[in-house]
Amino acid sequence: MSKRKSIVSSFGDLTGDSAKPKSTEPTPEEKQKTPGRVAAGIIGTTQRTLSQLREERDQLLADAQSADKIIKLDADRIDPSPFQDRLPDGDAAAFAQFKQSLSDEGQQVPITVRPHPEHADRHQIVYGHRRWRALKELGLPVKAILVDYSDRDLVVAQGIENANRQDLSWIERALFADEMHRAGLKPKDIKAALSVDDAQLSKFRYVIKQVGTPLIQLIGRAPSIGRPRWIELADCLKNGADETQLLETLSSDKVQKNLSPDDRFGLIIKLARPGKPSKSRAPSLSLGEVGTMQRGKNELRIKLKKQHQVEFAEFLEREMDALLEKYNQLRKEQ
Image 1: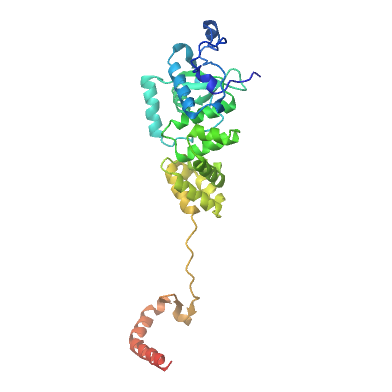
Image 2: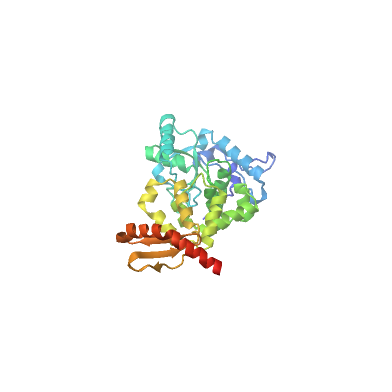
């Protein structure tokens, strides 16, 4: 299997050193052999700054306007990225509107794909999953830019793209940081790709560890739920909240179909929060066949059986003055 180029190498030669004897710019004949493939010299990503990576990404997007670098693919022969960077979108109306705009106006921005590492006749998405899904449902071909990315290159490329998106929820960013970590990326590369610092990366890891991916996926992307409430849920689970109960609650069809991701989170956090300690009550004192009496901190409750409710109440009213007088006399004597 041939060694794949680095992520930055696929963005084009941006060094400006045209005097180099070995040019990596493909000849017209090479372009015809590999239509749509963005090729360039080999540059190590870890030696580049985040600013340079973004500039190179912008160069890739600019180059994508060139017709010879865009290919058309059958949507059914494209697979999603093996690294999930987005949870399912619960806003069906918004997606329907997006799909309609593609149907009316056509695909204006190509997606980015790589050759599938296991199937020669298929491709995998680097980014552009939403466009691919909409075009697939419409039965339309997909315009794409083809790049040579290893798994590591792919996950870094998704991270760079996500850093420029405003609609990713906090938990989606946390999940993607975890994806990059499990792919073997160094913390400095993850921080650069997502534009986060050590403190934010630590919070991502804490929530993913305590809440767990299965529970997060059942909740969904929860766009209105930010870091503080996710950390609160993580704390609840760390302190003994019943994860099995939460998973069972979220797994019901009623919850999944009728509640939005934000509402699902609200339901789960209520269940996960520790309950208020119940107020202890003194045991009831039997009044025989009349009923029971129970003494609280600042109250006295007498519960009468139905057949004695009227008569005993009238009895208390008649005897109350005498009882109070006797009570006060006992206090004086004590």
